[in-house]
Length: 339
Image (cartoon, rainbow, N blue to C red; front, side, top):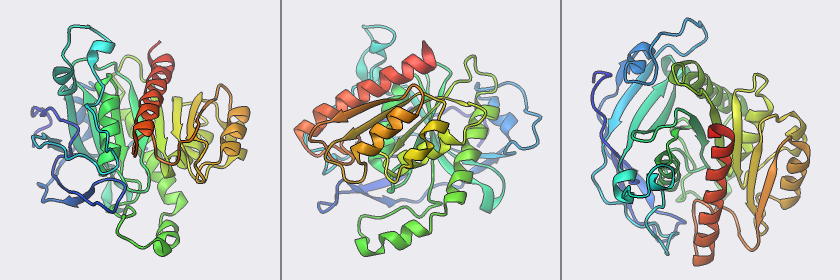
């Protein structure tokens, strides 16, 4: 497919994924449907789509990217966890014009499956959401929880961020092998051991470099933030501690698991830490220590909330605090990327 081909608008449901309701799981499980063959494109071709205008000369920039256009026409099945589901509040009316209809605004997001890098061993699959009408020229790198980049809750959340004008890249941190709710928990540690820290860190770095050196090359702001959930929240802390070039302008960490509080002093970007005080996977003490150590950090601790409440709410109370946490994140990103 040519790089200049028109991209379809997407709704919060998943392109090329069939959804089936899993009543024993925290959210709907996913069954992959047949997907068309991706087309290999050079970065200069990608930039012809309007995101950039000239080819980078850096030798360490990934030299190719594959694209698959996504146009979703299916209705998103309600998640088991979101029993009190309501329409996502992601209107451009909040940032531009009070007369803009929510449905019209949320349809103006373009979704693309991408493969970043060269070769099977060094390339990273990802899902890119681009705001169309109100694009502010900034990017958010979203690091998923253990259920991966194709999970409906993760893509819904990324979609909502993009509705507010951000370009959002969600990489496949697990190389096609995310944790599945159907697996017995006694296999979890073995699965986790397969996710080599160096390999995961390398994939995140590949995506960061592509966003900075390729996707944002012609953008006016060139500003980049990182958002992470659970497993991705722990990787967010490590990523920002390694960010010696200060490429990231901000971070938002939702109940990060296995976070190393000793890395806090090495984090330069302002980070918003969001967690519940009933979450054993994200101890409040660790969050408070990171808040003290990291420059410009802030913690928002929600009483009575457990793990995953912001993107996988399971009650009316979770839903209310999830909306509040989303609003905090939106304000944080606006303050550090737009203002």
